[in-house]
Image (cartoon, rainbow, N blue to C red):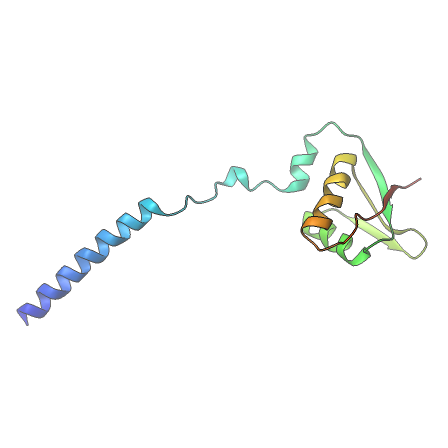
Length: 112
């Protein structure tokens, strides 16, 4: 019984040491300040907010707008219509090509 207790004590001491070493060598956790939403970043920019419309890759554009928390509306004549700064629209086009598998940049025009 005593040998079993010594073995368990030895194992738990080594486990504690290994856990403390791993905590020091782990990848650092993402800090809260780096988890800023895309739309909140754009809120601080000085771009004028305009209305935009698109008919291309509507399902991907709608998904991306929902993920970013941007409200939009849809009708058959104009397609998706939303309000955002120009810099957001340019970044959104790049994100659609690089992250969401669009083969071409979508055509997003200013709504008049």
